[in-house]
Image (cartoon, rainbow, N blue to C red; front, side, top):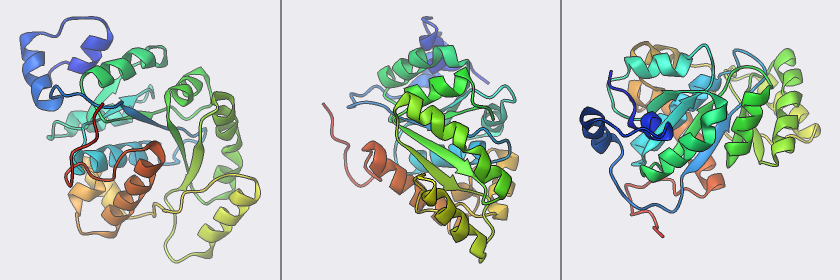
Length: 252
């Protein structure tokens, strides 16, 4: 696998000829208004951060945007997913939180439209750095008591960073009253909850086996519909048109 053009430029290095050839396919030169950044943060392990990050990255790619994922988790789950992936985008870069400003600037200069930050399951300095770099924070949370209790630290991070944060109910059972009970409980605590729900569906699990996302594994399935709806909603919050295929993005 060739070294990332984005990561090389963030490090202040000149890309090699091979990297530029790859980069021309992945990051065509163009002028854009700005790169939008979404951070996926949760203190609780197993909340579905990487599932959310990779599926949103693919949704952006399918909508016609150039997208990339920064994996800050030492477990490198998103990076391993990217290694299996045949498609060029979204590119997945494993790096340290201290280098986020350089990575965001490299993404901007390479014509990226959307950068998604996948974080480790803790509320530490890396998560705070991700929160500060983001235009929007998404907090995946399963509708279970322990998970609901654990999001307070992440909400505090968002408050410190002064960035908008929304809880995304994930791995939710279908046809269960517990989902709406969880929503009501979170909203009663003052949390903002995304209108879309990511349910527990096999498409999410099967898709990752060969580096795909639910919209690629089963394009007409319910999981794909959930991801498309969540991407459309999140795009609106960060000022990104839902689809670049239907019309050219406004440039400055």
